Length: 528
Image 1 (cartoon, rainbow, N blue to C red):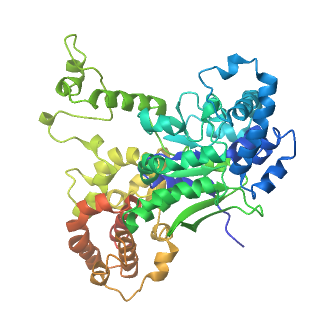
Image 2: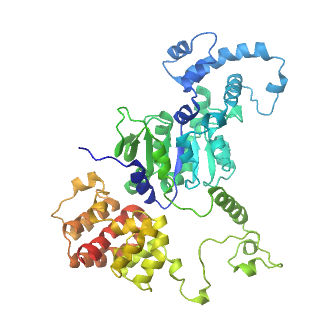
Image 3: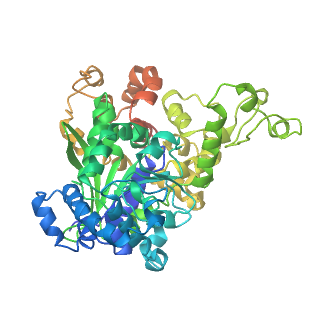
């Protein structure tokens, strides 16, 4: 009997491996699901009055943008006959003299009439997406309608490529409508002409989105995996990857949500070919999208995303020129910064800080990377029990998968009985070695040779074996050779001399998984 898949739990764990919150990449299937809107062909068919839209498709060899252009020509002739007196329309600021503009205008009128609020009212899936606990950094979409800004009214809208290029988006708390919006009907990417113009600038768009795709998980909702808009964009982004590690990192951040063809739920790693590159991505198949939306509620963010965008934008405006930079940004204590004679323009406080004169930053200043480093170097200037009781409860809320805890639990095993009030930390404490081993890619496991030594793995050719594969191979080596001496060897011969380099160059979750496995073996398996 096959084991039941817990989509919410597995996706939440996958998202917790990233240091950044996810972006949603929303396609037309999202609006069909919640607004019952037609697909692109169905939408154009409603405006094909002189002949069936299939006739345009047949002449265009089933090329939708080409068929849309042919339809726009015929539609334009009829529209002008009926609207030649409507100067309020064709002399407006939004009107661009082009054959497609009348069709775009009428499509915008049609979509503007959709009563979004009544259609989404009481939708159980959307209630989960709108839950105040949901944590996302932003949204990218090719949709024209206003569903997303209705759902997320506090996010700032950027419409079309030009907004992304010239209006300095902050990549947090924003919706990027890259194919235009009905609020600016001339911006709609509709016809062959529009796509040709869009594709000329697509490389610039890919460059703008590159950091998002490398730093954030990106969840695609409402697209088929073979959607040309997506595969073309991913090909451009993949071509910018300068190493196999970067390509692997890109693939790890890609998550596609689709409906299953046979009602069988799944979450699995799938190989995708984009241009000449191959990368693995995560494919989730479920009919219940609320499971995915619930997974977005497992992280914790103390500041709402729309306020974070405002902070980031204000700081950007302060530092974008060097004029009087010393006056406009400085590190001060609160009383000094808010004094009547202060010339500081913007005040932000994040986290817990102390003056240098106060000595150590304290237990509240410990980060997850400090915990990882302590497993390798044993150099935190704090008692392990204090770290367990004061630092880990808070850290575990943001690091639900790869936070090593066994070293500290070993100092006071009885604390486990007190962890009901810290469920995230309790789950970390109860994770076993198999939990981490199962997260290593099955392809890497098949390639691992149990006869290898640590030196064999270290000396493997970088062109044949990426740093992330080496880290996973070392994890498998240690699992197969669980001895105190081997734990020490891994630390002294590799992790200690390479720690800073690995922190910068290796995939964060792969690096931290190795340290969690080391911690699990050294402080639990062998200790027990």
